[in-house]
Image (cartoon, rainbow, N blue to C red):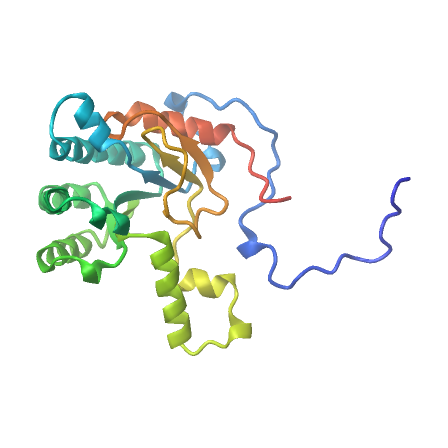
Length: 268
């Protein structure tokens, strides 16, 4: 038997749903247009996050060192950045070094930091010229002093950039970020019944930034690996078998097109 409609409004929790994640979709799922003609603004993600996976497998498949694989991965970053600027994506977040990566060999960890330092030295002025604003997400205070100095220089040199906001997640872990957020909230003296989702979001490394609309992982794995686990609650996920050093403008465009094909409902 059909249930009779309620004769009174539904009483909802005062803090639901989370942060009003976006307007209800007004159009059904559709085929996306070719990117050569550009995507309408409403079909373009405001924030794309990428887990750059597959450098070591790329290297081993070619019989070269892991270091050369990571170096090829750094080269791939340049092409993706340029394509993000070309396509008008406002924000890009790249997962460069997780706190779990400290478990790798001394040689590999040292090599990764050497590549980061080299990239900062070589690319900061180009990023500045391209209008890219750089921010680093993670426990920067745990990094070597020389690396911290290079990062601070890049942040100050690109502070005026407005075309693309680039977040580099370095020495980052999503659970660590939540631990640090809880510590900030407790230290601020906020009472337990005053804590809501806005309180937590404002205490994260990404405070004030939009959540990712699209999260891409290269390398064939299908998990988010402790990356932006709070912020990606409503992100569209795209997994590709393409190893990161082979991920270029065409693959970036393919991810944007896949995003445009999706219909986002946010529980509505």
